[in-house]
Amino acid sequence: EMAKSTQLLDNEALRAYATYATIVLLKMMLMSLITAYFRVTRKAFANPEDVAASFGKGEGAKKYLRTDQDVERVRRGHLNDLENIVPFLGIGLLYALSSPELSTALMHFRIFAGARICHTFAYLIPLPQPSRGLSWAVGYAVTISMAYKVLKTVLYL
Amino acid sequence: EMAKSTQLLDNEALRAYATYATIVLLKMMLMSLITAYFRVTRKAFANPEDVAASFGKGEGAKKYLRTDQDVERVRRGHLNDLENIVPFLGIGLLYALSSPELSTALMHFRIFAGARICHTFAYLIPLPQPSRGLSWAVGYAVTISMAYKVLKTVLYL
Amino acid sequence: EMAKSTQLLDNEALRAYATYATIVLLKMMLMSLITAYFRVTRKAFANPEDVAASFGKGEGAKKYLRTDQDVERVRRGHLNDLENIVPFLGIGLLYALSSPELSTALMHFRIFAGARICHTFAYLIPLPQPSRGLSWAVGYAVTISMAYKVLKTVLYL
Image 1 (spheres, rainbow over the protein chains, first blue to last red):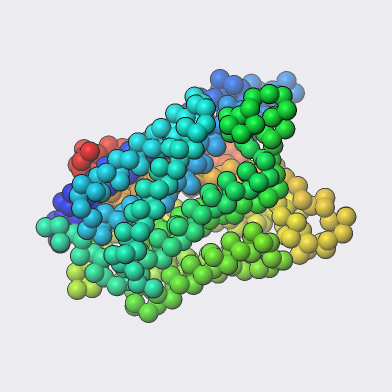
Image 2 (cartoon, rainbow over the protein chains, first blue to last red):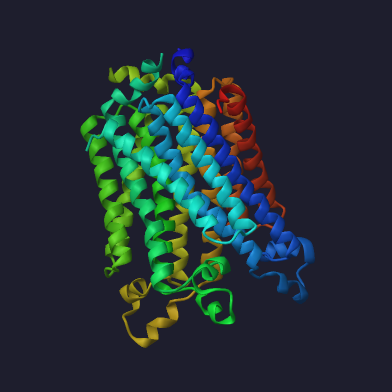
């Protein structure tokens, strides 16, 4: 019985989806660590209790309760990941279930993951535009392409 | 073998879920384009490299590194989508797998998608309250209703 | 036919995933209600039309269009939920499909859900650090552990 349900991952397109979905989610999770790194090194915190843990509760500690451009940049990158990786997760899963050609599916997943990794480097270094804009657009276009295949295959309004 | 795994989408409730999940995700993705449109037309950017791409790196360009009420409104709408569409994606998928009546499932998915589209119009035009509040509440209630069915069917703590 | 597709939820690891995924999503949805509660009681709104609904459109009403520390705290907690629960949803589903030991899977899901509930209390009360940091780290570590199992089982690059 258990074998029956889990043979889902015998499907190669689904295994490819599982691999790349996990990779882009781990990449997104990395943004939390980078935010924490910049908050500590730039001494820029959002919560009084975070400042208190390192610098006590005195008046002098209040100056660390502030925004910092490097921290805000990572946070914008993190939010952009959420906005783009959530559609990939949902649409990509349905796409993998819609009997795509394996090679076509792999191409979609690889380009999306590559584009999002480029996007992160372009945002954090930062690279001059249109580096970040292009890497964002590539991931966006791949997701639209998968959505088109899903709707063509399953449309049931 | 591949046929076996992908026959998942032979199920009509799952096909309906796939259709409406893709529609609301595409709607959410549209918010990125609307944000970009307002950033360009209102000349209000978040990153120095974005300003530099259009206006160069001189002192005069710095004034475009600012927040704008129209841009912030679209961004709040986008974040509200994330906060509400992520629960729909997760709970809706599990609901579609929990053997719902097809007509009941369709009703849930259609009302959710309609409510989120109304929410976007109410936010961006903007319509007077309680338009936005009501459309938000309808989508929220639909998600709670699906969550109740999921927990009733599968509860395994 | 329908029976075939939905027997997916006969699998106990998937039923456990469905239960805990629904619980953490409902917990995340609760953050919307808490935000609304603080916006109303602190009289701190983000949109002019929200202020107009309660206080009219006069000059005197403009003072309610402001940020408030309690509202911002709930919103940071909500965003932190999104950043951490989205990876759990995606990786946890793939993990549940990767034939884990049922007892191991239950342990992962229970610890994640417990950690996120503690995180919410630590953020909203607020508790002194490292309460919030630790509960965040526990949920993060559980997700990494599931990602490792998924990649070990399905890796297909």
